[in-house]
Image (cartoon, rainbow, N blue to C red; front, side, top):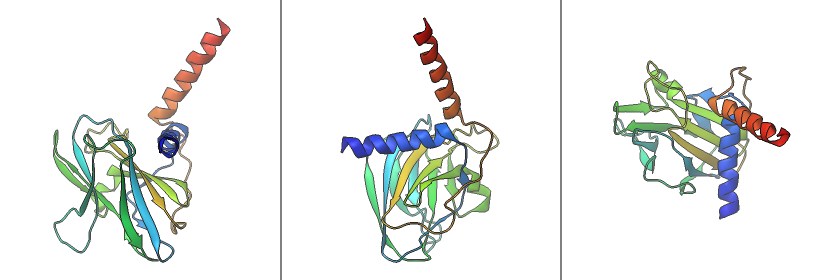
Length: 186
């Protein structure tokens, strides 16, 4: 259990540290029938408490099925989301419970920037949530971080466009590398 968890944490960290190639607010499209999907909680660095939901377009007003509470969940907690068929779309919602309360819906265009997707591979996607409204947001996308794993390759968007702005994680990695190399010279 420790090795897969270490991989997930490393994958999530690397995805923010190495690049800022996020896709915002786009539902995940299943490409093949009988694709099993799991979600694994990685981390949350939020002051505000929030709950991540698997969205449900069938029930008006519902946020869907509760997946993780960003303060109560532990790294490695995993939920089986189910088995989906070709053409099915997965989207997520997020309820901010403390601080500036909000319900963010991936399917709502005005909320799209609250959800960042990083396609690590065709079978693994890191979902990152920003809990603050964009007008006051720190845009760190670390308020709830979840790795989505698919038993079969995804369709749709699997590549990203390079963004030349480094993420905060990239700056931390560069700073740490500078400190380590500085220590070696002494």
